[in-house]
Amino acid sequence: MKTIAASLAISAFAAAGAEAQQNPRVAPPAVYGVAPGLGHFTDDVLFGEFWKREDLTPRDRSLVTISVLISTGKGHVLANHVKRALENGVEPREVGEVVTHLAFYSGWPNAISAVTEVKKAFDELKIAPVADSDDPLIQFDAATEAARSASVDAEVAPTAPALADLTNRTLFGDLWQRPDLLPRDRSLVTVAALVAMGQSDQLTFHLNRAMDNGLSREEAAEAVTHVGFYAGWPRAMSAVPVLKTVFASREASAASNPAEADIKVVKRGSQPVSGPAERFTGEVQVSAAYKGDGAARIGGATVAFEPGAHTAWHSHPLGQTLFVVSGRGWVQKEGGTIQVMEPGDVVWIPPMVKHWHGATADEAMVHFAVSEALDGNSVTWMEKVAVEDYRQGRETE
Image (cartoon, rainbow, N blue to C red; front, side, top):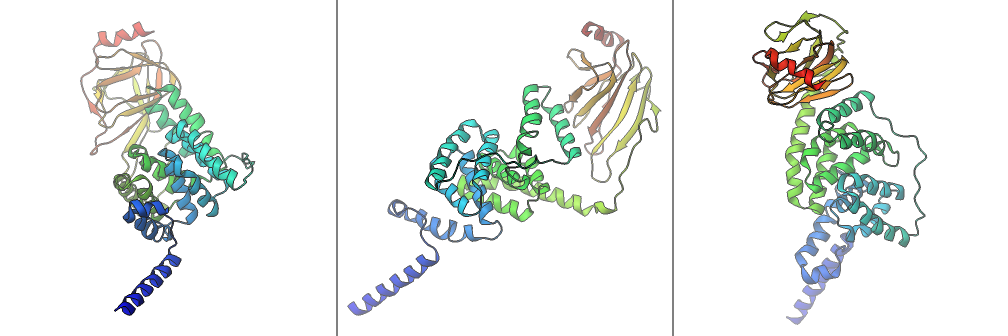
């Protein structure tokens, strides 16, 4: 019996040795002494299985990992993962740029704390001080950036003008253009950090941007899964509905066969019509009206108001944006004060807010109006503005 027992023990030891050679231990010995289950999951699942999956390259996995650790303030384990990232092909300059990038997305304290831990790894590996890249700034599609900037101006600037200015000028105008990280990698870092921090409100925009920058659907899903190990399963699971929505939206867009669709140019001043008397007071010309095709909900037109002309009271189910082209105008929500609109101003009217807008009493005004439709409806017209209410605009001059 002793011989049989000894043989079994030797066989078990040999099997364990073979398994250890295949999946070397990564978890510190103390883990097995305190939480052996954690040790096994660390060595067998996280590093023995998951890190070997080919849906993301080892380099990408390292970028995701250090992004999660920095953005969630887990600097005490950052140095070892920085060394692993360098082994996986991440350049020292790129590590520093991830820290810089995440200062904007997770806060300066996290970034400064990360610098201390990254320096430990650099010093241990005798890595020279990092310098900025000499490559030219990265240029993004001008039309896309103009739309993004206009959205920030419309939705943020009226409430927090400094935040809007810094978002457009510094965050997207300077940081995102730095060549120290490729746009695809910068997007991967951003998505990983947002998922790790539970910022699902920002994830839709950045996930679409990541895929526009070259991140595939499979890589995006794998990155979110990877975050689950380093920020917790609830964070990864909370991101899944956003992934689902973005994937479906992009599939629907691709299914519309854009290669067969024609670009439409609505010429300035084309198809002018007079504003209907039941919706406007005074002389109003509506021209260059357009509406998106297919599933698109957005539409708009250029509207020219003669002095004293203005709309009736109305509201928009999904809000409206006005861009003042020329002249001088007034806008007012029900119960609020009349505000002046001038050339270059962008005016955002929130959903379902009863309001009117038009030219001042003494000067004509032209604006470009954009709104989205909900169930086919983009505006609800109401009663005309009382003469005495419109005249209150003179008090704002």
